[in-house]
Amino acid sequence: MSLLRRLADRILRLFGQGGQPVPREPVSLPPIAVVRNAVFDPKPDGWEDVKSDLIFRDDLLDALEGIDSYSHIIVVFSCHRVPDDAKTQTFVTGDASLPQQGILASRSQLRPNSVGVAVVQLLRRRKNIVRVLGLDAIDGTPIVDIKPYLPAYDSVPEATVPEWVSRAMQDAPNKDTSP
Image (cartoon, rainbow, N blue to C red):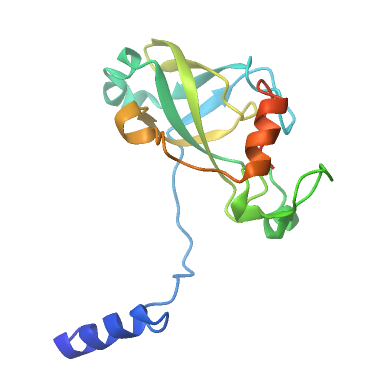
C-alpha cells in the first residue's frame, strides 16, 4: 500500500471512516484438549465446585511442561453445543430485575462465535491430564488454548463495572451473577 494511501486511511479512521472491513472468512482452531467431567447439559451457574479433567493431545505433552507450577490458568474453549439460532441473540434475557444488556456486554455462553474463556484453579497435572476447578464447560467441550494466569497482567485492580453488577455480586457472592 502506498504511503499516500496509508496516510489517507489513517486520517479517515480518526473520524470513524475508512479502514479495512471486518474479515468474513472463518477462523479455524483445532482443539488441543477435551473436557471430561460429570456435567452433560449446559447450565447458567453452579460451576464453582465442578472438577474437570482437560485431556490434552499426546503430541502436546512437552508443551504442558511447567503448567502445574501455576495455581490458576486461563482456559479458552468452544461452546460447541450452543445452537446456531442462539448465536444471533442480541440481548441477554432472564432476570427481570437486571437491566437488559447486549450479548457482547455479558458473559453469556450464547455468543456470536461461542467462544468461552475462564480463569480456573489448577488442581494437578498428570502427564497429559490437567485437573481444574470451576470450569464452566460441559463434558466433551473442545479446548482451543490455555495460558497461565499471571496476576500482574491478568488482574486489573482499578477495573470498574456498572453499579447494578456490583450490587448483584454483593447479593450472591458465590453464584455466577453475570447477565
